[in-house]
Length: 466
Ligand SMILES: [Zn+2]
Image (cartoon, rainbow, N blue to C red):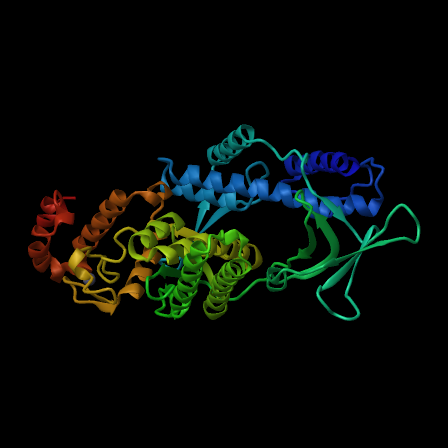
């Protein structure tokens, strides 16, 4: 197909731009690209199909790059420099003289000199990943129709559909009209609808939306803790989605009852209109709630960084503590939507989302760092046995997630044991400092009977020896 061939040619030109200038360009001049397609169509392909695909490919490389660096045994300074170069797409092209590092924890900005070795290393890592991954081939891209071949029109009398798509055919003056129903998601997605229609491989039609990146004020880091009572609790102490589970439970029970009835009548759920309608409504409800809550959080705090528990551990959390039917739908609809929504706010507001290892965060004191099973008095209440800090258990948990954003090793994301060792070490470091000097003798008593500190007691007895 002509548009695939054209897309490939444009892509190779974009790679040329990338290697010589350091980035792709949606609006690059491509007059020289030969194609049977109209100029307008060529630019449409470049803007809406080729560059977005290449950019997302590079963004995957970027993620891999930072993973490699974070898990390496390079010095902390070199890590920061490499992460800076990565963030600013400076693997191949030299732009910055110095690397800037924002230390959110101490609210300071540090500047580092970038050595030649570090630049070379960044280039090597980048090229290594690039060569081991398959570049987008544009063999399967979907066709995009622009206003020359298809027009989107609002129906005069709105009835059972939302838009007309008017397709030109080879016979002049005999267009085909296709009625289109807009998905609820389309309206909520934000952004401006373009005059472009994308035909997916499965034959679905989509109206392409353009998202303008928005900048928001604020420079805070917040963490969100997933609870079993409230869907989300923020490190600032706010609770979100209090009614979510109740409502989900209501739906789940209805669906369960219906399923049993159908079974008695020998009808498969997939044949029941009511069953389909109920599950559709439930999934829509969860998706809407997730989007509403995240929107509120973004508006309320205007954060730069959002820290959350890694989604895999979340899955486990619900697997152990929640009724089967609720778990199923939350896992199935809620997490998918959450992932999508977080990706969206990343793109729209440039909010960084960091996943952390949450293990033991609910038993750790966010004030002094002491980790003890007995710290958590009940599902709701947290009280530190060592320093006496009291808080809502979910709020305390969320606060701990904030400090975990600074644990650099993301490889430990799924390891429960490593999280404990790290937390214990952190606490012992706190204890050896001036600030917690007065707690030392009390700590000695507690630690001797705390199984988490087995093997660490020598360090506590003489913290200065570390
Ligand atoms: Zn404490």
